[in-house]
Structures are given as structure tokens and as C-alpha cells.
Length: 178
Image (tube, rainbow, N blue to C red; front, side, top):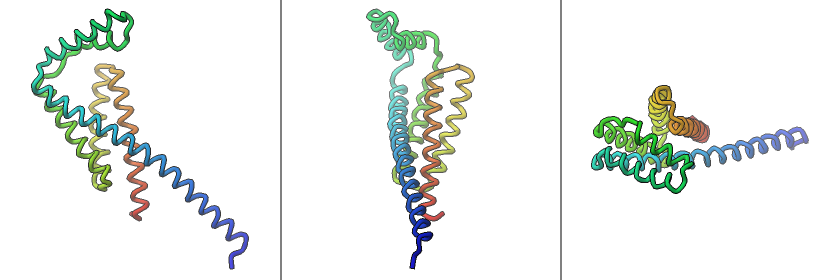
């Protein structure tokens, strides 16, 4: 026998479960989008590291200058072209070997972690958070030195990725009863 009070209690529990499920779905979506995006970026970092091994920085700088000057000839107020041209003339790249190693190792580590996250391997959640926080610490240091808007946006995106990994990990732990 179930009286009105118990029905209300059961109804409240079911409603709460539906809210959690909808919330979990939103978090799952944010997690998938942010982790897949991070995977694409990591793959591109890996490719850039490999290319950096074979393409001298002077050739890259000359290429950026050529593209920027062509764009500025068509549109003298082009924000991106003027920024790229300014960066090509003023930014000092680290040694080619260091840059290649940095990009390849960073891309490789993050790409492997993304694959593990998408396979829902539990060890990858805390490992990814630690690795991303370490990279973010270095990025904040570089932001303090260079005041880079691009690096600030990347760091904010990384923060969203870390948050989504942490939330997804909490959801998986609750589903598994940990």
C-alpha cells in the first residue's frame, strides 16, 4: 500500500533523477566537444612539431610575412594580417630543436590522453587534469611575460577542458559506485 505522501516522495525522486540525467547529458556533451577539440589541437601540435624539425624558422617567418603583406595590400586594416606581420617581425622563437621537441612531446602526450579519455579509462581522468594543469601553469607564466591574448584564450579553453574532465570523472565515479 502506497499512500499520497509516498507517491509524492517517489515522484520527487524521479524528477530529481531526470534533472541529474539532463545535467549529466549537458556535461557529457561539453566533455566530448572539449576533449575532441583538444585532441584535434594536440594532433596539430604534433604535426607542427614534426614540420618544425624540417622547416627552418626563417622560412616560416618569410612565409608569414609574405602572406601578411599580400593581405595588407588588399585590406590595410586587416587585424589578423597586421598581428601576424607584427609577430613575424618581433617574436623570437626558441631554438628550432627545442620548439620541435616541445610541440611534439606536448602534442603526443595530450593526444594519448585524449584517446584514453574517449575510451573512458579511469586513470586518464586524473592524469589529464594533472598534465593540463602543468601546461596551464607554464602558459600563465608566459602570459605574465608576453601578455599574449591568444595564449590567454587557449588557457581559458584549457580551463574549460579541465573542468569538463573533472565533472565527467565525478559522474563516472558516481555511476560506478566509487
